[in-house]
Image (cartoon, rainbow over all chains, first blue to last red; front, side):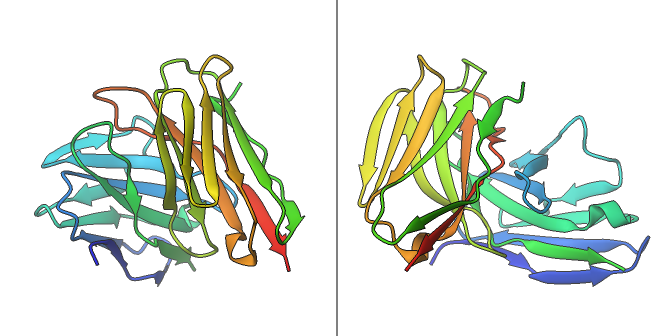
Length: 113
Length: 112
């Protein structure tokens, strides 16, 4: 089935040690998003790619970076994770048209030691 | 005032009950309205997607949008234990806007 796949499902890293989360999609959608979701909170958009165009949210910390090498893959890099970055990270995709809904992967739960 | 308000619950109902979940919003530019279901340790799953005011039905689920009152609802008929999850409302303005504004989610438990 076409879907949004996130790897790994669970990631543990040390304070300050760079970590990369990955997302792939078989939906052939133009737009890919990264969200951060903390416990009992709404997902918070970090940034999105429209094709190769990167769009950063104004309040996304510089510690968070993203790469999209091709249509199917998108990566979230956290350069120096702090304890406050422990969260579920969700990848989503949508077609380019703004009237299309977003489809989410199952997320990567990141823990910081 | 937050852009989207959603009662976090928790909401507990007996199996077979009709469930009503609601969100209010303040931004009159919102035109697209969604309900997502999120099981524990999983990503949000799109349940319903509506444009502007009106009703949309899909099986046991009905979504209502009242733009004049800035109020949206999700009704679940004949609720099942498998409906136990957190329900997130989300909305977006029109052309050129990709950003979703979410409610904080309502945690629903359906008791057998």
